[in-house]
Image (cartoon, rainbow, N blue to C red; front, side, top):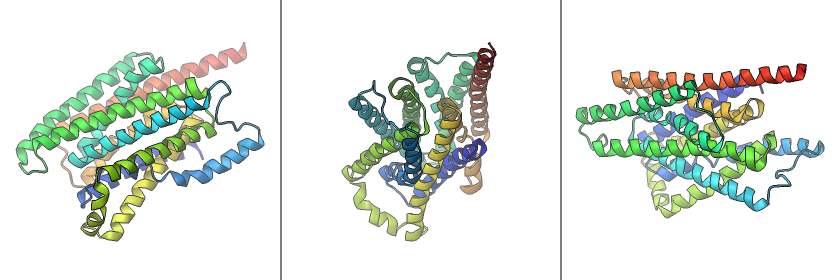
Length: 338
């Protein structure tokens, strides 16, 4: 699989999963824990790829899921921590998607890149270049602008669903989720560098699968503990598109999130973790455009300006990593020549 295909899996997978998640809520879905659960439960489709790569690694004596200097308890704690953060981060994302229009939700979600840079400064020794600072400022302004968008939407539509209280709750939940996602990305990079101390395909698959197992268990428990499990049968029967569409929608959400994971894994393996992280949030500006097409959401001036600022912030962030990679390649070339 080449890099262009993996880039497409990342962008299309995340965009499709977000839109399908909104479709689930728009047509009668109500369970926030189910919205989080389906983001992880599809991980078994990765197991065949993982099994084949493990066989190849065993043949070449490269398969060893833990380093000799790292205790099993530390690695298990790492997977549990990442899984818990992923589970609750996705739960808050589900709340945000429930309360907000998908276009507004997607633009606010782009702030995760700013939080990722913030946490990377402390956890991954990331240096704040002018391009990173520019990205942080633009993404912050982009999210703040949507506060005014919320006020406008509330004044125009006085229905319960668009009340100011729910708009604010959706905004706060999405910001909390973005903080969690930024922390998760930085901790994952930290795990590769300090705990696992290598980045092979098998190790990356270990992180994704074990993290998904933990997150699946957490969201499954949340689904039962919250009592939302009891309403799923009634939810399915009253789903506007029918029972079959209800099941297929959830299945497609699970599959598309895993397609995104496959693309992300490939980019981590072939390029770098930071590049994959930056690319994953590049899909966020695509969603508002698709929301206008498929959900007939309005794209007024404030939302359009916010989206442009978010895209500008993404471009600045990715350009920073492009310069870093170029500099690294030049240094390696000079070293090899010497």
